[in-house]
Amino acid sequence: MVGSSATLTAVLVLVVLGTDMGFNYIVIEVKTKRRGAVKHRLPIIYPDVLVHKDVFESLKQSESLRGFNVKVHSAGSCQIHCTDANGKSETLGVFADKDDENLINQFPYWHGIA
Image (spheres, rainbow, N blue to C red):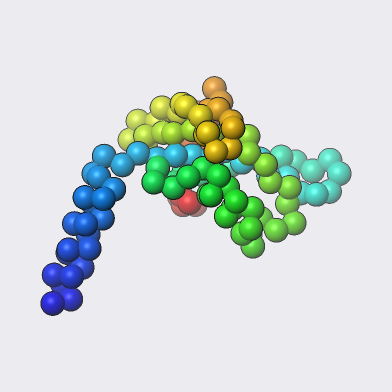
């Protein structure tokens, strides 16, 4: 019975989310609170069923970003198989940036996708 329950769960997830799920992203700027600190831009990519603002608020609360100044640089939607970064995050009030596509395509994903 466990196998059929897991299969049913997987089928329900695919039906609810669809097999054509896209992705949203937020590019955050992270810098230390020290004067003259270096800024880093990091793309955070996640399924489009999540809301930009909710993801950003969760990121700001994360232990790994404690002690850093974190702000949104840009946000939008993208496709992983053929990145085309575009659009706007209505909840954060920012648009996709012209450099987001290159940043996302060139990011070393062996570190993982959020």
